Length: 504
Image 1 (cartoon, rainbow, N blue to C red):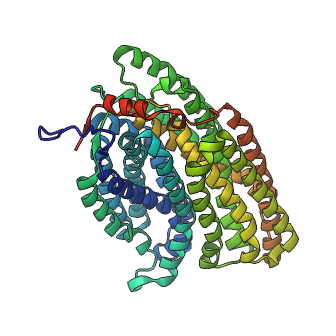
Image 2 (image 1 turned 180 degrees about the vertical axis):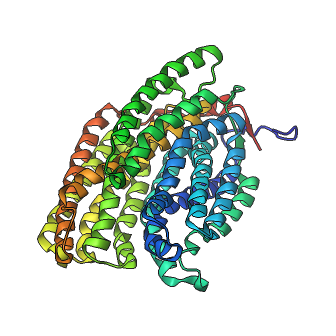
């Protein structure tokens, strides 16, 4: 923080106009990350063919990003609290852009794997700051609208990745093959870096915190013990060491809790702010987020396999099929936080969970009824129902989780939200080997592939519907209404005045 920085606490009638420019910048960065998570899957056959990558290397091209991302999220959130959310965001987006260039220029599979690991690590610095910057920059009465926009971006990013990947790969721009899926990040990243340095207002925790190195080691170790076996287990035939590693993850988690309690009592700067779990809305929301991640992790992977391998559709046809889902998520997310949640509260999220389950069950029926002859327009109805349900859940869920979190812990809370979401997705991906591949024969004749994938898809979706039922029940632990909808203007003004370390 330089000596020329000045506080930007303003009277309630004179809000900082730059906050909307800052929102556009951080949302663009979030979208870039969301797209990058899924865009690679479409290009995997081209990468394997052009680079001669082994199956293990292909696994790491896709899984390395997720592992580095999940392992670093909590640390990234805390670094933003300590060193400034704007500063860490700019480092993250700059590093993400460099890593994207290295991916696009990779000369062999080993370089691509290393660049993807770096890309995931930089995303772990960038992404937690998005919610932290929103939480610290916008007053409570505006956050509902902002989180609605965030939910719409998430929905758009969820299906834009495969569609954009298909267009770029099949388009073979400038004869570069698959490489534009990474190089497209360069102009976006450079623009975000320049505009972010100008329009984002700096914020950090009010106390002088220190990075908890032991906590970083424990969190990273625990996540890797859990996620690495899940990522590689099916490929390696589920070895004994994988089960041992996953069994060790809760032990490391327990050690983390004990250490963080002592760390908090000693100097007040733990990596994981355990006091957050005493906030009912946060603890309940984290549980819902984790289980939701499991369900969506299963669905999106088996959905892609079902369309491209089971039905034999091209990447572009499969990507276009997801457009109704994306539109439904965006529309429902905007309506939920701006109009529905202020009036109906928690019931909106529960209705969303039931809609998700209904859409999944409708998909189960359609895939069985139409079989291999099913068309994209016949899939539109279940996808619209599911997208509407996801929009009703995702945007207000983020709002509910953060609504009662103290601003000084916004970075830590945001890191935890993203981490449990990634953990849920990883658990879902691990379960795919049981609920999808586990019901198929290892050796299938060409004529058996399509029917086998249809049956496995329907079986997996039955589990996804059950997961949505669990989410519906967990939501009873959420507050009936998010805290900001109960706050008066005077309370919000006071909260703004109490927020130190907002600097321009």
